[in-house]
Length: 384
Image (cartoon, rainbow, N blue to C red):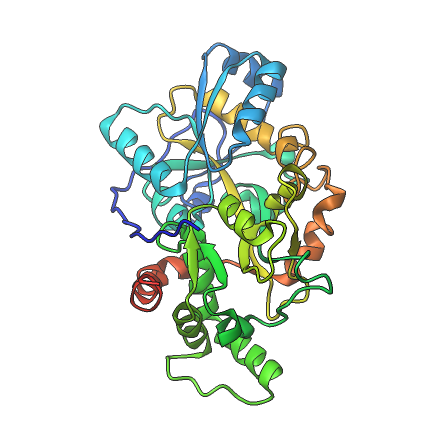
């Protein structure tokens, strides 16, 4: 089992407003939603302009970007160089490229909502462009910043070792001696969404206080500031293990033939590895107060993109049923923000059925707390 720890470095940036040649949202909307651009799309004209620009470059958090790029090229005849890249590296590259005036990336698929909302959008490094012809299909909440995909990142267990269902029904159980050294997550120092998850937990202490009372039949006596911080401390000190990817965690939890396997937090897309790798993964259904969190992936356009029309066409494409297919039709665990898109029957329900089971991240509040949560992790869990 390969473990890791590290530090996530935050960078400051100068404020730059993104300009556009298309019809934009009113100035008042832009003031409250920095970097927001919307356009009444003439698709034929956009395709023509995009084809005149040449090859497109995108950075994406998912390896499935290569499939989407191939499909896009087949449809529009525009080549796409799609590179899988984690959020911290994307941020670093986009900032460096824009500041140097040597922009290579046209669009990004990005998961770090707190950094996006408080830095990249606010300081003008990217824009959240929305094609208004999709307005009736994508909810207002998902239009800014533009979400093209949702995933449940949830706790999973090994169903071969636990054939009667999830061995944990309450998150507080993961702080008990039975689970010491047997809980795995992606390293919070390298995974901004996990930091946002922990920050949202401490912002909603009533959830963890109630879960504690439901499990143990008594009120929590917390030594930390609230029930959320108390939970994190106990979890971190209980030998919490970290890995660099959801795939590594899925392999460790779901490998066949284990007698006493760990549980781990993974995106539900890794359930496809039950077929691809003969894993025995199952979701911890019924876990209180939530099974995990709702993980968005945002589709954004980089400031001064060398191929702006192709970037817009690609962003619109991944927001369509056809464009999201590599994450839905061809895979398990992904949900399009587009209400007309296909829902994989292996997804254990619709996105509306998943939402009550998941914590929705509070991006701006998470950013305020992120360094404090990271320091807390490094003190109580980073040396495990």
